[in-house]
Amino acid sequence: ENPVPCSDSEVPKTMAQALDWEDPASALRKLSISSGKKAETMALELARQLLKTKQPAFSPTCNNDTLTASTDSINHVLTKIASGGSQASQEIRTLEEEKRELERHAQDVETALFLRTICQELRQDNLKQAALAIQEYNKLQRLERLTPRALAYAGESSTNQVTLSSQALQTNLLQRYETAVDQSNLQVLG
Image (cartoon, rainbow, N blue to C red):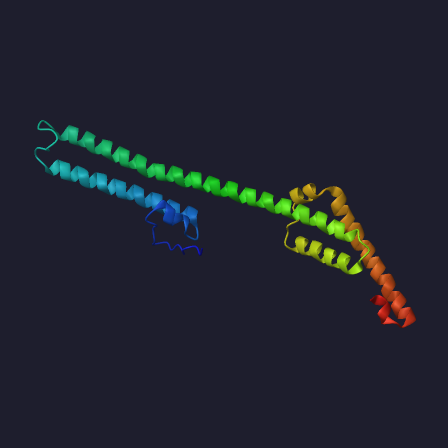
């Protein structure tokens, strides 16, 4: 699903349509403001129509005070309807924030599990696997996925093991390189 672009002049027709826009919160705000303006316009138009009528059909004894009270009442109801849209919009924003927090939490759990997998690969004596595991760890760092919560889930021992294994791998590779150079035999590097 591609989000619908939201220009300043466009207003969604329904709440469901607003949720499909690029910026749902902004679209819902626009819809709420538009609904409030329409409610006010309709209430004023109704008041004008009621004031033009000499004898409204609903009450033969109706006077201007009654018409004004009726108009105010209708305006109040329509304003409540518009503000209900604002409340719904706020609830949707709250739910979206909760969803984002759950997604961040899930990503932290996924990262922690991945860190533990990396640690298992580092425990093996396979240099190639260890080098790949260190690369994956560095990639997680670049992507800023090693949040404090993810590291806490993985456990301090996991992060310490990655650091120590990385240092040991560098030392091992350097020693192999030096040995290969001393022996003039690059095949020692594997």
